[in-house]
Length: 184
Image (cartoon, rainbow, N blue to C red; front, side):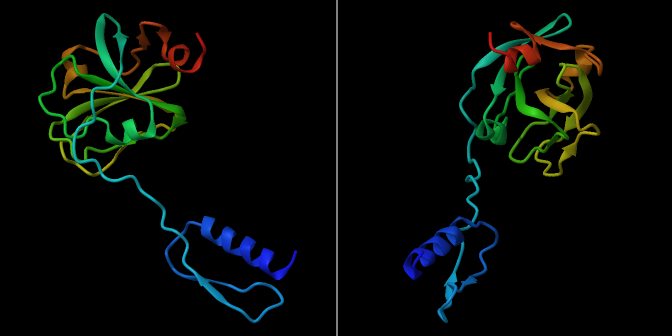
């Protein structure tokens, strides 16, 4: 590899490094040449300024209760969630589906109305139910690392409908795991 090829490789590698914006020094081997390189900033999605359009829905069953829940399936849909939405009704719901279980953490930035959230394990069992206070930017963190779904509804919905921890959530297609992760 000649000097020019080595320089191109080093500069290319430096451009793909995303950490902070401090310049780094690149010195190609066998030279006295030092090149300051500023890596690109990590690109964060812009903060949303309005509610997202209504998402595709799915029928959710919690015992005798039924909801038509919007499905937040992509990172962008999950990031925006129910931000900026007002006038929630008892039938409004959104289910967040994550690729694997983790310690869920939700906040209410840009949410003008309080909500209730069920943290649900991979088997579709409600493990925790939390109140999410409007505009609260403090995260409500799950006590379990085994949460794969979160169902948001109008504040107090679970209590009004006698849905508690231990309840199993199903969809019109069967268990959550089958609905979202097994091919039909």
